[in-house]
Image 1 (cartoon, rainbow, N blue to C red):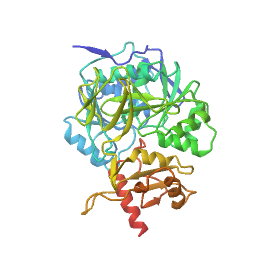
Image 2: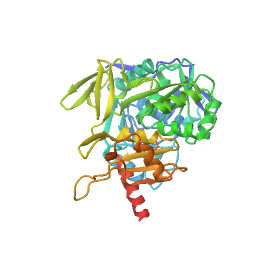
Image 3: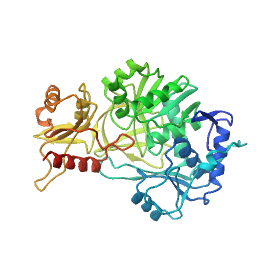
Image 4: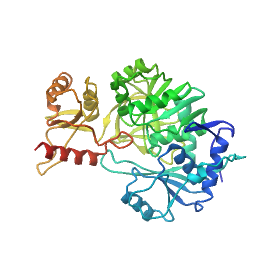
Length: 443
């Protein structure tokens, strides 16, 4: 049986900063092993911990105990109940109460306080199912993706080589650890590279800036376009940052340039999906093409693109349209479900939304196609926009200078905020329900 280490760091290296406490690899492993002793051997663990330290220790404990981490897109009672029913022997680990859930919940708090030091680094079967990721359904449906330990181990080493964070970096992430982007960068990356992650999970601009200021340099910020746009639009002076990594949604060139100017950081945008993990990168402020990570191969097959890599369990059909520039570079043309045809003209909803978000004064927004009715697909696009100091007419004038009239959203409604998930994504079901309520309220 092939085994791989839980971490390639040495026992005395720092892996996390938790509420001011530096946590060494040895202490982190000791805490994980203490919690693993309370888990049924080989059990699926529904990891609902919200604190990044608690989540990471629980993730490691489940793997050390020979089990796997089930990572649902939310903490709703119905979701947890479904997982308990679907996975035999599943147990729930959570660091906060679960509303409405009546089953047994394991509290990791005691293990998290251990001051013991592990004397060795555990090894894990390469083929062990270490995680099952459940997507948020941003395209309309959720999916389940299994991750063997080999995949997580090898992809972590690949990500470090391709992202190249500065040695000794202190990492702050605004994304939750349950999401694949947060898992790869704020949980697994410190297990395999010379970086230390903060357990903090700031949401508001002032909190993000305060947490960054508290970290030693060089600083790295892992985030999403939603949070990064809020940082820029806030007017608050940004701390010096060495690197900013962004994913989960398209990042506009203008936003990337403003971030670099205001923070001094090099902004790197990451492309990938839950099935592949991180797949490609680009310096968005300067280039439009994506650079494929070394381990991957992309091929056109039928009407789509398939990704392959030795560390993946199998080939993955991507949901996006790609235009190859060279063997190792490409441009994104939009999701297959993202392309719309109105009055014989085609456009990408992602690109249209990008134009909307580039309008000064727009803090957030989305252009989308309303649901079909008995007459077929909607003939007009719609938009929901967060822009406290603008009127709909101002936004339409700005859009009219850059998009075809066929794609002008009508209705265009101003709202206080969008129903984004914690990752910054907009699940289509939540978006359409929110849109329906907005339309009813508008009469």
